[in-house]
Image (tube, rainbow, N blue to C red):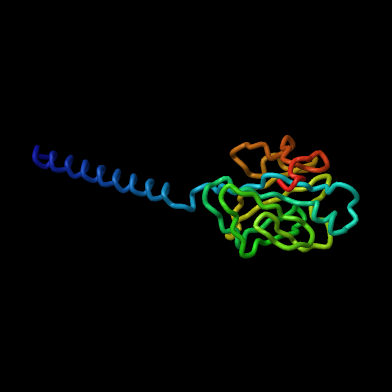
Length: 185
């Protein structure tokens, strides 16, 4: 092989490597900017699974059973089509609702008039098991957003890799011990 062929071959290899590096960095930048890869600022912030007093299926009892969803981001998030589900498959689907930035909505089990701070599932029976259950929030595409479990029979992380303590040690307001939030926030 001549010296000029060797230099030309090296230049071609170097050019190919440089082009590959540019394409690779462009694809990394594109995926980093893709909003599908952003983590949601929406999460389950508290659960009142055991309404104070007797579980008598009254409006008062059913509406004292709730799950709070918080948006910690600055921008509102359209929750239309998102679902909140228990481990038995009871599902609430958000309809025509946008959770404002830095805001919380309380999803009550019973009947009532929906507002920006309170939504109602319009159920006549309790949903959340007092002893052990899991509240799971999914977006409108069915992708996992967050879950909170309580009681003895649940998986500690529910597929999480961020280890925010959503298992046995999670004390975000379960049962009678939660005295936060009963004053209208």
